[in-house]
Length: 386
Image 1 (cartoon, rainbow, N blue to C red):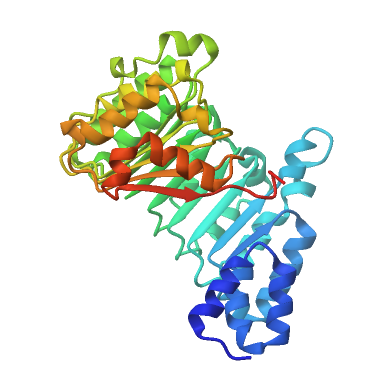
Image 2: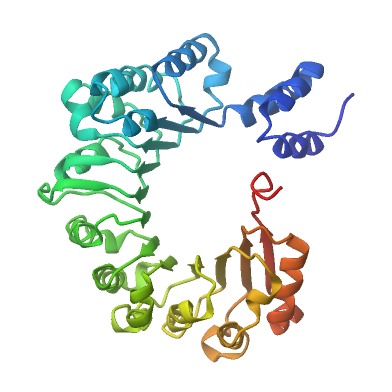
């Protein structure tokens, strides 16, 4: 059966999370094979020596498959969970040789993820790792998740391996010592930080590489404490008019919600006049825990702001029925500072059915809905809510 290319692409995209079904479709109709390969091998996750060896063999034997890989993830969660009981090299030692081989095979690779890697031990086992990583010349984005480094200088050395690096994402990254390198050039377009990565250390680093001249997108996720807010404010102040996209999430302790929600004491956005997109992640929908949101919205002084995005997790429609949501609706609908808005998007990830969530949001933000500005995006994980 021959279907139009756009229909095949849509079906393949729908089956992206079901590799067995996708493979069966490709076997039945060989015309689907290129689409299926692109979907199945777009992202490859290597979690140990044996699967890494299998994929390396596949990449060497099938260049067509290797060309499909755009995201490569090195994950050593099993080593992370057994740290102290298993030899480091046995659990992480496969990474340097794997990186060396794949760096000459994955020509279209653009994103590298490193998850749970203890770099302070790994680099000691195989100093050639840095040389291997430097061959990933097409990589533009790197993410470190739950990784540890002996010093900040070691972390910097790793970043300098990637000549095309433009986007950096840090999630729960730790350094044993704050020692850093002398100033150097690193052109970053985007930086994302979350979950207790030291913002104070990052602030000093951003100053040294003069990131305020290049950085266009900044994500400050999971601001927990006053020190986080203070460092975030200093980073934003340095960004000045270069910043075009900002993502913010505050998630304080119960005590912190009582004294830290007046975020304007630390954060200043009036100088970020080139801001075009503001994204706010909301994890706690208790009204008393949401005042930081309206406080941030009142800080914006960006005449070119066109898009505001909220990440929310709704369990019931009545979660949107409160004075705090009325304040948010008024600010976005009627405040002069948001007169330039062209789109307000809610990304819904909770168990509430998307039609109920959409109906509740349209009712709460009726003026935005009437103007055709309101959007609701369904990002529910249906596997979790069956």
